[in-house]
Length: 127
Image (tube, rainbow, N blue to C red; front, side, top):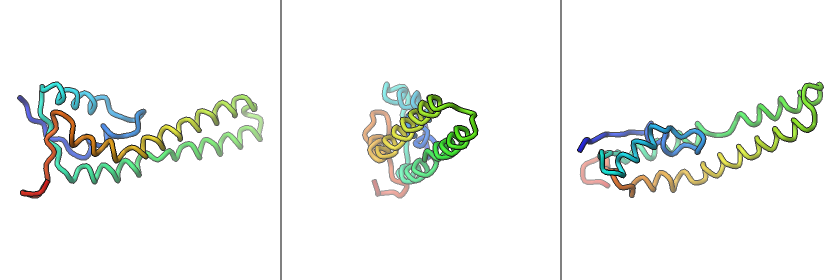
């Protein structure tokens, strides 16, 4: 069996909001779950991933797009129907990202129990 050491970037790629998750990270865990490989995940990576995910994946773009919509509607570039549809999509986007960010803790903690992952402390004798 092959042993693969993963780190913070893998945890971020796997636990990011759904539309930003990396297929390669998902496939790596699938390989571990099937017994093809053994992943080794150091404990500090989860704490690092937690903070990176919470900062990096905030839906900031939605505010910029809402400002554009307000301007575009006022200046005749979009009609009310386009504006409303776009606002609904932005609301959905923000809601889904918020839900994923609210669940990031359980997703990260769940990695500890995944089949095929050896979760270990960076310090000898600590788990």
